[in-house]
Length: 343
Length: 276
Image (cartoon, rainbow over the protein chains, first blue to last red):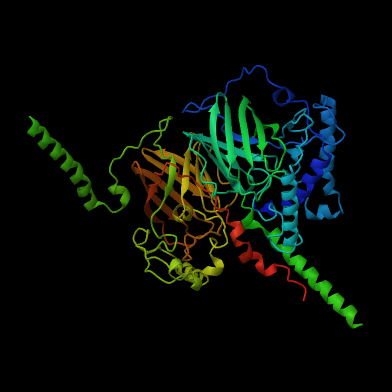
């Protein structure tokens, strides 16, 4: 929908706040996502060609942060702690809409769908989505990883300030790509909705945000030439029993995931645990950047379709208007400086 | 015995060849020419349209017949020049209302400024089909996905859980049904922003598109479209063309995230200028 242009900027700021402060997750479906499964009595229905059926509309919206918040040492909250953490998170999410504040002028989080708590979200007792390393944190960078991170910051600086040009702005403000499609697929801040369709030899995942589609081939074909580089990489999948395993490489490195680079390999595991739940695990392997691979675990919950077209770029008045505004402010400042000079 | 078999086979083959030829004489549209091909079935028993498809024509330059012409961008020379085309509009000409034809001509004159394709906007329907890049059909019982390389445009065709369009959109709202061998896709709920081609042929938000996908061989589909839009056209009209299947073993839809390629064009004039 064309309203997309408005929330993107706030969504990023809001996400930062969420990541920094949120302590996440609740009791209701803890048994599905938080507790390791020893026995899996559930067997997914089958598609007409015999694959476990993971089709339908799903959401991975969650208040659980990827990394364990500072000061928290345990792996799981008690149900009461989890509820308290969610309450606090909802409060912070809504704080932007305080009447009279700039944030409130920008947009209203009580608008349906922007505040996660108004839609279905994944509840979890975990204190972080990261399950390995055990401390719930992204492992340290390699020396090369530090060098590349610094180099990237340098390159971004050369592009200028955020409002200097379209190219110097954030990927989501530019409607290039958002947090949803990945891989790995992450809570996008809002509209964290997906549609999965299966056919012979293929699984398709449509992300609502910027209508990003990933087509996972299941026919055992190799990855394309290393010169083929894509924002979302190239995904190859296979079924291991009840689990869809998807390996993605050939990233272009322009949409770093927590600082990843083009040598990133993402391994995702989708397992349907119940009619309304897909367990979603992913391992991040980028030996250029990190001293070891790391793994996170979340879930996708069945949600109500259909998904409407998200024509983000087509309605991106936000990017245009902020650039116009920035140039006007510069002009005004220059005129004032001139006036001062002539006095 | 052997000879009789040979003669019998020859006669049968001739009949098989003649019948379509004879039918052709009376046929007005390609659909009528279509031999009674029966497509392989999906596991749930429907004609199997899965695969990566593409058109082979110059319709994206102009859906009406047109001669070859120079490139609209001087620097591209012959590489950007317009190839001639026989047109894909049944009957040759689009039945515009008089004012609408005038608007199409204005669109054409200002096409470098106005054509949504240049801005990497979603292409609309049916332009997405013949825009020139491949698209993939992914078929399930409930939903049939049409996934286009250009701008990552995507359509969900609802086969079961059908509703009216909740709001207007670039790619419209598609409900589908099977009529024998043919997938019929009925699409409404368009905005008035997409074009049919680079020649400025256009529609309004009253556009109603009915597409018919009929397999005609293992690797071709007859694709027929009926266009209805009483605000722009004096009567419904049709386009038709074949779709060709990609048979390369490694064929896949690749990313064409063109937003990045048009930012300088769209926003370059708003770039901060170095202090003088």
